[in-house]
Length: 137
Image: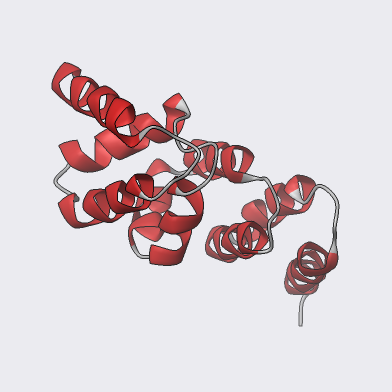
């Protein structure tokens, strides 16, 4: 095993066991292995770590295409993101609008279903924002 692979597994172990901020480890892991870092972001969110926006910013700024692809493949991540209190963040709103605009309708529909059950937002008001943003794009 080379040093890069060893460091990757050290970061995975640290993210899995750390109770404090995992963003430094996710950022470093993203530089080593984007997909593994993305999966660990989902893992951290599933463990209740509040890294929705920081993780989204990290991955989307590194590669919008890979972020969109991996996000569309992960129903559990869609639920974690769009069921969170951060679901109405403009960056997440824009991401959802982009999914609609590029005809990722199935994924957008899944995200809208998660938003509908989100107790942190008023779905009807937010749906108006999504529709207005879609037509403005």
